[in-house]
Amino acid sequence: MGLGAMGYWMARHLADRGFLTTVWNRTDQKATAFARETNATPATSPAELAERVDVVCLCVSADDDVMQLVRAIQPHLRPGQIVIDFSTVSRETALEACGLIRAAGADFLDAPVTGGVEGARNATLAVMVGGDTATLDRVCPLLEAMGNRIVHMGDVGMGQSAKAVNQVLCAGINQAVTEALAFGEHLGLSMEKLIQILSGGAAGNWFLEKRGHTMTQGRFEPGFKLQLHHKDLKICQSMAGQLGAQLPLTDTTETHYRELMATGHGEEDISALYRLKRPAP
Picture 1 (cartoon, rainbow, N blue to C red):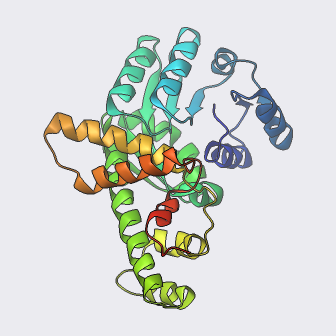
Picture 2 (cartoon, one colour; picture 1 turned 180 degrees about the vertical axis):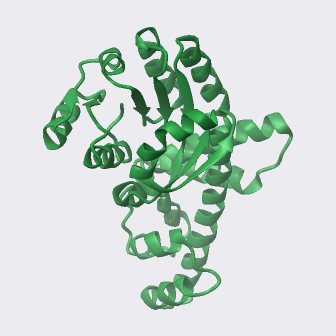
Picture 3 (cartoon, rainbow, N blue to C red; picture 1 turned 135 degrees about the horizontal axis):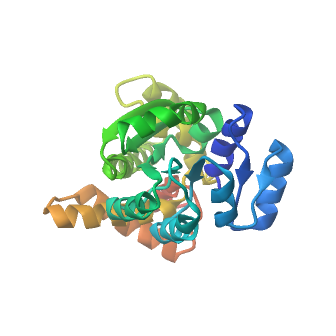
């Protein structure tokens, strides 16, 4: 359920391995077209999908979306079924969803992923799983169809806790890479040569390699939408507030994202942060 930028490719890999039987998407046309491509059956509702499958996979944008779908399928679940949520949501949402799923006799895993659209397309996602070990063992072949690193983080909710740490780290990397490349551009360096040499040394990282060239060329096609990372950082800030922890880089990035969203850049890639730092035309 959920055939967006990430879910589309994750479902494709499940289909390629022969696991996928049924799909649902909020936009019917997208599910119908996907079903034609993969010989899956499009479900007319989340409830219909839940009644047809052994494992329900969710990949949607926000906490409210997850809970809406969980409430829709909960009366139609049966003992032995498993619900896997690949969305990035709060730990509290994962625990609430798990309670509803287990009340129906099924089980639940929170399994947020990282690796961007490239990772989803290439089946190289890292999957952070919270939940029962035996349940994870049952669905490992499905996860291995989508990712090359699956790590059991602990009980339900710990997958989302790990993803929160990932999102804080991504915020800091985004700040560092955009600031450094803007500094290089101010210095008059060749961006192509600079990115080439930096990528091979101690400063090399995934974001620099995958987004450095596009951001310095003024292209911000979304691999990870800025407004979605902003949503995730708000979750991180809430978690930190509950713990009394400080996240100054996250706070700065959230403010910058808010500024970019207010000027119409929320649908762009998070590398659009470069807009605030690059030299004026």
